[in-house]
Image (cartoon, rainbow, N blue to C red; front, side, top):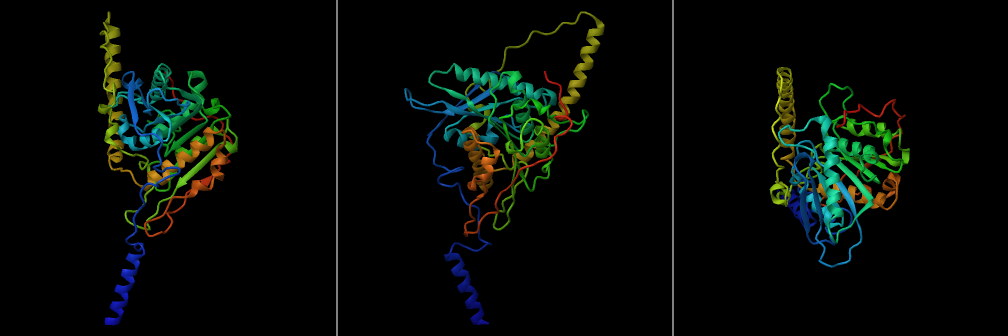
Length: 399
């Protein structure tokens, strides 16, 4: 018995000396270099908001030295999840994108507290993007490369990102080389369902690459939203321009890596609205509407009641989503799952490659190592080849 105990203690000591066992394994920190890594060329980020409320566009750009020659920078439009009005919910990721040399545009698209209806949010995002791009064009020493644009969305923002790409030509927005839809919400199959609807995607430019990213433990929408986007985009896009990437959970060590619906959030209080220049500005008050007859007054009261009921529902959904967002923190899921994957996809597609060039890149599958040297479960990648649907989706009324 004494000898057995001594052997076990020696084995435990050896495991510790070699970096720990599976029981003691933890997730790695951010890689020193490469996609998702911390080898940043940019030291700091300039943050400024333009416009007001749900039509606001917030710009995050590299703080280049005055007078320095800087080539035109790619533009990443990051469309937040439902209720995540403040960029703080994605702050660490925004900083990563900017410090890698991108300009990030964050269209706010919502008034907090249920102030923006589902069928209005895509139109509000359009306003915010236009406002931000106009401001960038008027900023001395800053050049945005509108031939290298990507729309990235999370949660409901993933549906909006796809809508923006389909509407780009008619709305005067830059046509993206890639849409990256992360953990999309379910797409409503009828006009009565309360959710952001997917517009008709037949308007997508054939050059667009539609890449969806899901988590294998997404209990909110699973892969339903991602596959709906890929099916709807099949009308306009060839198979080599569509891709589904799945991040897989891994419980080899502690804490486990969980690929869930809200895991793409990367909170950083330094990116809160209150800490961004002009983000809290309010528009001048509107003149009150005066109704001249009783019929108009009754109609106005009825519309006010309808909007109050809808606002209650929207605010309730926001509250539920934000409670789950608040539980998130920056970890290996971000560094090796989301950030690394998106960095590689941007590198490939903004250089002119298609979705299959992302799939062929061997780096896309690597999720790093647990601290005991065991590989984190690899990503899986799929090229959907479903038959095109009869329609592009349940089109939402657009303002």
